[in-house]
Image (spheres, rainbow, N blue to C red):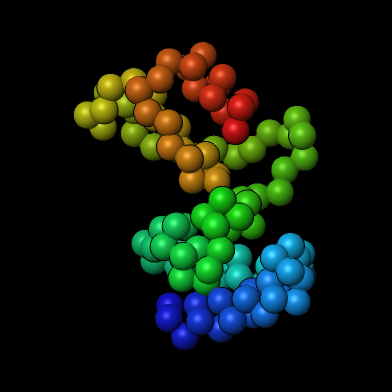
Length: 116
């Protein structure tokens, strides 16, 4: 991860210098980073670890990695084991952005997700 991470960090740092802190990452670079980060995620690396390695926020990288969905469009979900068999009480929800909600009622979880 280190060589590629250093390369992406240098590119992003250069854009920050040129843009004065505010910049828009070109779609090609954003897509390249997303493919690389997706591969690392499949190998067990966390979004926060990957984001730190390339010098960006976990939230921003999470947005790059989340599927692009129009408002009101349904998303595919993956159902793991139910809460009773996992040993955790209550509902467990993990969003595409990496937020994890545990132990809330369905109504509470929906309320929190609407605010995110």
